[in-house]
Length: 126
Image (tube, rainbow, N blue to C red):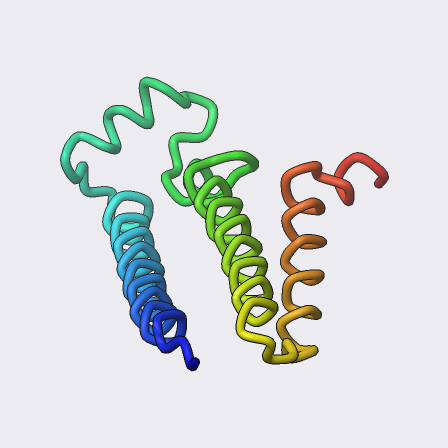
């Protein structure tokens, strides 16, 4: 019996993730351009940055610094990718289809990236 749920769900999930990431990057780049370069106070963000971070009220620096919104989203997507690979490999066990080696390698790679990013291995050893 062939299970068609995962490919359909996986395609919709991948499309949703790509659209979200594209919109997030476009919005962050657009806001950084307007606030940091053009010096326009969009939605009061510039005023808030100047009050909260007087030493560096630059949106770009605050969005992409250590443990900021962007990095937390990256951790979330890496963890979600690990869960997706584990679910896919377990689904293949149940349907007696041998898993593709690429999925195993992707799972190992996602796990290593997640550990490196969350534990800051490079930053603490340098």
